[in-house]
Length: 246
Image (cartoon, rainbow, N blue to C red; front, side):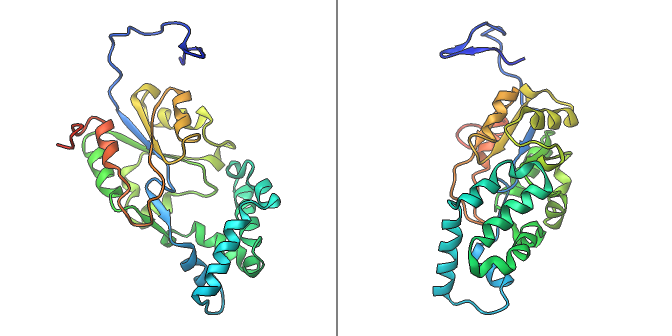
C-alpha cells in the first residue's frame, strides 16, 4: 500500500527504515523511445508519397509536421489518444493531415506506424533483454499504443523475452494509470515493489512509482539504431556493479 504523503514525505511510517528494498524480480519496458524507435520521418514520407521529394521540399514538409504539433485541432486530437485504437488512429492522421501535401497519404503514414519493418531496435536492446532474462528476471511491455506490439517484437526476434503485454488501448486507459502497471505485475506474478519500470517519459513512465513500482526514465535524444543506455537497467536490477563490472 502506498502511504499518504504530505509536502515533505510520508505521513505514517509503513516499514522498518532498516529493511532493505525488495530485490528486483521483474522489469517492465515502454516501447517507443525505450527499446525501439520509428524510422526517420523523411524516409517514411518519401515512401508514402507517389513522387520523388528533394531535400528542400522535404525540409518544408518536416517543418510543417513540427508546426502541426501546436495546431489546435491536432492538440485536441491528442487528448486520450491511447485509450482506443480509433482514438489513436484519429490523433495521428489528424496530425499528418495538418500538412496539406501529406493529407492524401495520412492513412498510409499511419499504416507505416503500425508496420514492424518501420521500427528499429536500439543497438543495446537485445543485449539488455538477454542479460535480464538470462538472470531469471521476468519481463513485460507496458505501452501507450493503439495496436498490438507483438508482431513488431517478433519481426525483430525480440518477442520471446517477454511474458506480459499490456497495451493501453486494450484497457481503455493510459499511463500513468496504476492499473496498467499492476496488471503487468499480476501477469508476471510479482509485487509492484519487486518491479522496475523503464521508459522515456517522466510523467507517464515515471508515474509507475504511484503504483508502488520503481522507475527509471531514460534521457531523451537517441536516434534510431543508436545505443540507448540500457546498461543502466542492468545496474538497477543488481546485475552489474555501479562501476560497470559484471
